[in-house]
Length: 257
Image (tube, rainbow, N blue to C red; front, side):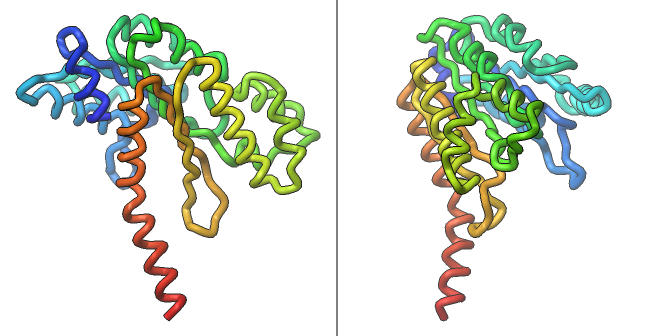
């Protein structure tokens, strides 16, 4: 996010950039660490203090009423100096509000749902709802459990995945594989390609695991039309995995010894 704000804000009117968090959460975790809304607030402050300041506007949505009220209270206490719009309700109902809020400014959208994610049509609206020359990037969590644990007999769940994937095409892709893991990988790969086809974006996909021997918990999927965005995300991803690689290497060498 700091890289996106700094780079895109350099050519944006008044240095303005917009961050959208569709599943904002409470703002702080139980261990008191900052969640994504407060991380964005910190980025806004840091960018505003630069010699060439950037103005980061933050748009948040949260569906659960109790969580919404807790986040609202935290923002009143800790983010009064930052432009924050907080909306209650399903994220899909506020996608057009985000587009209106962002107008022609660069927009970075972060979609990190617990369970079923945003519909395919809503993701396309985020990426295609403004002129393609307007800088827009989306980073999303695609749940591995959502697909891998699917039951042919559970029509409700099948339809939920249809909504996320933009149709029932994924059923053929998934069930032609004997392994649920391979089927899930194939669905996510096809999903990425379909979004790229329908938006003109490039993309990154990376599986996220709790342990090197575990199945992915989710896939991080990133979309951008700009080569600098794709390059910067790849670099951020590589740096973020440094600790992971060191831990895997340490276990491997210890086992060998």
